[in-house]
Image 1 (cartoon, rainbow, N blue to C red):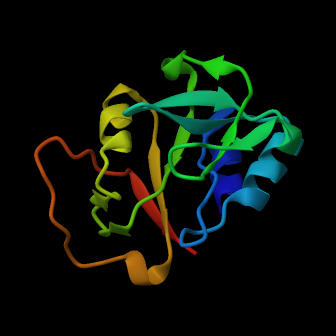
Image 2 (image 1 turned 45 degrees about the vertical axis):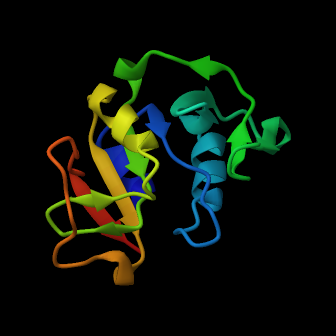
Length: 146
């Protein structure tokens, strides 16, 4: 589904996340898009922020110290305006695109700087009729359930 969206939207640079065991698995998608020549970005936890690094293959990955998440050691990516599509994790979503994160605010601090379509990726049970939101929360353009 996301591969189709990337092609339809004429994307070149995509922000993904390396999924945790309780999230929709993104590992194959990362490998596939990378193999097809897309620039794939993955977040790295740096203090209270997310830095974005270019995915440069599995050999350039390491386990992050903060949360044990696999993070890219690739080139730091700072030109956020070049991101064509962002796939964002969450604990829960609504059909309207509201997102509930894990509570640390990492994506809450990143999302205001992104000017591309935001896609929430979730299991069907994570799609709820409503979730608590705050004024600073940014809605996803679309939520895809897998």
